[in-house]
Image: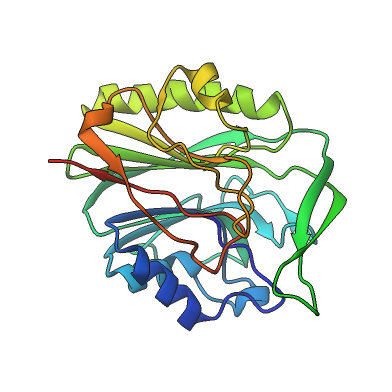
Length: 264
């Protein structure tokens, strides 16, 4: 799920209501803020964790600053993963996160790079006269992409990512991510679930990765979804070992949330 901000960002009350309504053990989110003024200088993934009663959370910054405005890449010395146990600080930043009620044994991060060129994108913007966002095309520079993995105490590793929107670049990132996920699965003897916004239309991630999509549902835009950008992929979990969750719109994102229940 993505939590893009409006002018003031979703209110904390709205965020907590939306997350609590999902009633899930693990949540992976993209496009989240960490101490950014545009969203009240809060730690959004910590608020997500609080709303779901999760003791474990992590935030992986992709950039320092605000996307679409002024930002920079992280330096080599800056912390790459912030957790509920991290005491270091970082200026306002933007990235991805995971919150879990299940104990996390280890966090990992993978750098996926970014496209050297941007492309025109059709994006939603706020409308002053309607609750339905307006659509406009703007040229967008690609920011650094990454993946965050949480190896859980229940025998699963959850990998969260937000891939590039540039065609070809996202496929190369998916290939690298698949290899990394398989390595983690081998090292930890866990089943890997790869999830997030892959910025690839329906069918491409499955055809390219050869992994199963555990959810087949259009996810974008949330007010009339016509395309699937968000996935949960696995090459280890069989279809009869899980079932899709029926989740309504969160009301705080331009993507629809997706989820599965793993059957015991």
